[in-house]
Length: 365
Image (cartoon, rainbow, N blue to C red; front, top):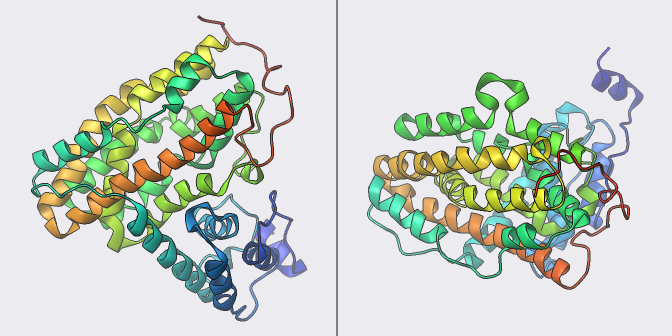
């Protein structure tokens, strides 16, 4: 008998590996620990959470709730009955929360002027947007200053997305057509290792985590990361899972790829400076080359072609790209501000010395 069947018969599920952050996530985790039964009437509780929030993007209770709700579609986030995935009450809750989340992003994210809806013009606008210097650089700090404990913290933050790398953007594949769809599939094929499971980027990243003595199981560090780290993945999930936001997810992927290659080279340098070798830096080394190619495909063939084929999506393409830069910029600033102040960038710091005691692997300068 399958685990879910056994647990359904018992009427209970294992306790999640992380804790609630407020009344809404308390209630949601409680529901997910049991088999579905009736209508839990969650909208009033969601409204209370939204009214109490001063900043949805940084609100722990709301972002954890969204993370759990989107996680039902990914799996391996929380051990629960699969029937919860499409339970009407949880879908209604998700739509209610993400409507407020999207509205907040559209209010605060600065979107540049729209270019002509041509492949070349859209690509040029995206390269101009992603090429702007937004201030202090987390990647430069890691290259020059970060110690082993900070490198481990950085991987913990990144694990929330990267252990599921490419999955949020892959929701867009059936929602696209023609040239844009072909471009998306070309990029995603590389992300998933081109048919070689050991070369899947999520798998390579998991190996990197193990190289620093970290737990590579998905969700192991949810308790440690702040709301803005969860918000970064939640935003991708929202864009990818809603067909009406297919322009936003295309723009997000374009910006994501355009801002990856150079920082990954700097990240790799920081790990090598701390004595880690190629078996650990492989993930970043792989992205230096791959994303230099992907950024061209994403800018011209994905986002640009989508704008040509569906000009009405152009505003969302630019919004998705700008949202990627804005939210990921906030997440990076949170880490950098904590480190430069001599603090941990995690809600719950890692065990002191765990990363520092991890063996160096093929030390390089």
